[in-house]
Amino acid sequence: MVVGKKFVLVKNFVGEPKAEDVSLQDMELPPVNDGEILIEAEYLSVDPYMRPYSANLPPGTTMIGSQVGKIVESKNAAWPVGKRVVGNFGWVSHTVVNPDAPAAEQLLKIKPYLLPDMGDLPASLALGMLGMPGNTAYFGLLEICKPQAGETLVVSGAAGAVGSHVGQIGKILGLKVIGIAGTDEKCKWLVNELRFNHAINYKTENVEDALRKAAPNGVDCYFDNVGGELSSIVIHQMKDMGRISVCGSISSYNDNLVLGQGNVPKATIIQPAMVFHQLKMEGFIVLRWLNRWQEGIEKNLKWLKEGKLKYKETYTNGFENMFNAFVGMLKGENTGKAIVKV
Ligand code: NDP
Image (cartoon, rainbow, N blue to C red; front, side):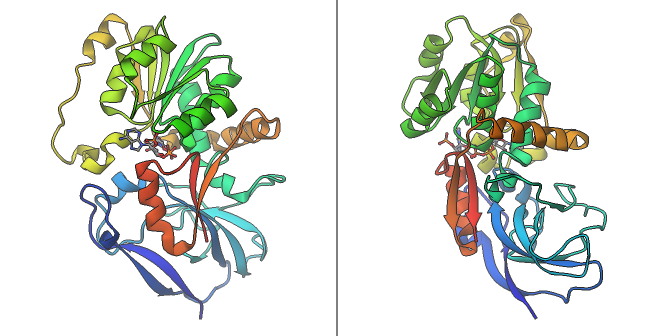
């Protein structure tokens, strides 16, 4: 019998997640029956959504998340040993699953799928640019901001998985791109390697002044990963008919405000900017484009192969370090996609 490991939520997070809120446990795996496969995790994703979505899970639940794993035993001819699988199996080292069964009623209702041919690119990209974050950048920018060449785009959370990707698509489309991120190193990477026009360190600079300098004529599109005061500052510098794609709100994820929980926080008044500049603001969940999922992946793969998109991954080694990687990502220790390598 195979014995794997899993991370279980033992206490709902309050504020910043703490080590004692989760526990690393052994798990015995059932035998592999007809139609099933046994997968060994190779790369696991830690993502911001795990914080708000875990807030209301019953204690005892395995932490949610996706991974790339290798098939190590198979009783399903279409899923042979040695192939790689992408699946939402949670924070687990091993999984027995029937990959042909309907997608479980889980957060990401995506059935497991075989890793597509990615050439020499690392398999872990299926959790980043060639996976959910990549499609978030692609659809969230194109479908909600509907940017036009020559316009000015501001991206917050700009050096992370989604933000660094959004800004690069902006450059591909001929936009002026301004990123906002939390360290000088991240800002240098955005400008020197990803060809962003400007980058602002929100922790050390006066964002209002720096943005006025970088975008003296105002902002057309704002791709918002962080929310809060920072976003209000950007919204107050938008042009007439500007568009705001509300992708995430990481600055408030530790406040348990999501889905009607917690008290309504005080916020800067943005309505005058919305009214008098006729702005459009729309939130989204990337699963809205589940029926176009493959289109996003193929487009991003093409851009990667053409060298138009560059990627960075911040690796944490060891399954047992999942929790540290998760909290580190929430605190900004990652540049590009945060990945755990087993
Ligand atoms: P990132 O790789 O961007 O990692 C999170 C980053 O957020 C950190 O590196 C940190 O960078 C930044 N951050 C943390 N706290 C704050 C804060 N208080 N203010 C500003 N920045 C902060 O994660 P992802 O790219 O995976 O996700 C980015 C956003 O997109 C998240 O809000 C996430 O929830 C959202 N998202 C939404 C989806 C959707 O369907 N709507 C799908 C996928 C992601 P720094 O050093 O710059 O502070």
